Length: 367
Image 1 (cartoon, helix red, strand yellow):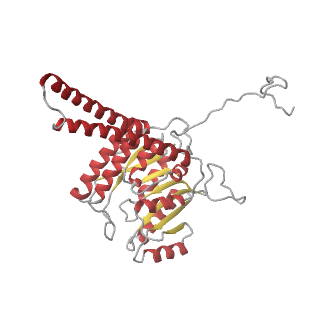
Image 2 (cartoon, helix red, strand yellow):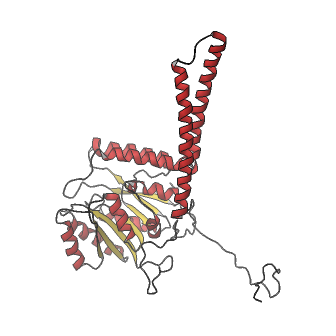
Image 3 (spheres, rainbow, N blue to C red):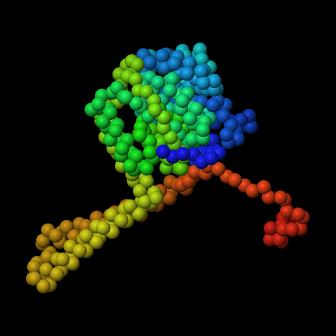
């Protein structure tokens, strides 16, 4: 488990874009570290008419007991039941509630991303609306992240879901994600609390809400986990199916690729290309030896065709690595992503230089 450095900066965001913070009267973003509320709750809602009111009641009680300023961002993800009407009803009565309505159903990750980008809190809590993430657990995560962590993850204990359809696939997926990301979090999909500016700097694509701890850890963030309970769903029907496990597998493969060889595709594909080239060359040497010394014909033999295919595959992998390298470089330039996270900056208190003490090359030319 990663621990934060002493006097860890509480607002150590990987990108200084200001995304998600409200505009000041002059029309620009307020100073870094300026938040209207301390806690933003982000909850996607898709056909959760039986859960919305109970979720709102319990999360409101938990946050009032915490004694922190807060907002509750409910994202309606294209619901076709009474969920949108209930959110509007609750928002009319509760100034802490913010309803974000998506034009159509876009999936859990997109709904979470939309909620994060519309949040204003110093800390962002991501949780489900079916009450399998108990609202009463949120204060413990807030207290922990106040110690200076970048992300605090709730690890679900004694889960009461289907062993075959949910728990075993979850154990396997979490093990693979820990192995590929080196992030020692045992439950990537549970309740999460993240530094707000860091959360708003993440560029999530479909399915990547399951990778948030690994993404934060990969940027150098300090992460930890706390145990949480895992009660059964309050009401309604689960939207999770066994088919989603296939999507998780692809996410893990992508995570492994992104973390391989210092995020340089040419290192990965170049090594594959080199091994294929060596294998093809050894096969050709063997065939030439048999041709010269044993008189075996080589042009129509299967090993000869296999060696030719290995040469072509080697060329293809090397070309793919070079193309991906150019695409990654272009993406980094366009997005402004940095491959590191600055936790703290320390500057010495140097006295102002005496007049005339600067060398001519550093003196102000206007003097």
